[in-house]
Amino acid sequence: MADTIKNKYGGEVKKESLVAYCREQKNRYYEMLCLREEEKNWKRFLHSKLLEYSGKHKYFEGKINYLSIVAKSEELYEMEYKDYRKTIFEIMTCFDRLVEEIKEG
Image (cartoon, rainbow, N blue to C red; front, side, top):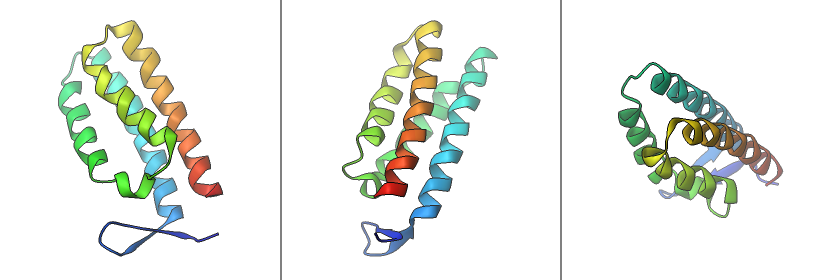
């Protein structure tokens, strides 16, 4: 089992760094939930997350939970609050599963 994952530039990233990244991103989604509850600009925050993820796809190739995170995130724009909240927690669970995939892979 390799301890690194190659990036699109031929470099390598430690798996432990990706695990830490995923855990941080999970926290950011909780923060986005709070932003919406406080009626602050959560859409700008979401937009920046989606841009960030589009550049990180190489690290997560073949990881179904990564695809779920991106797909569910894109749908948040159109959701009523009840569904938005539920989906945020689903995304957070996907991050937990993604961490396990990275550790196992």
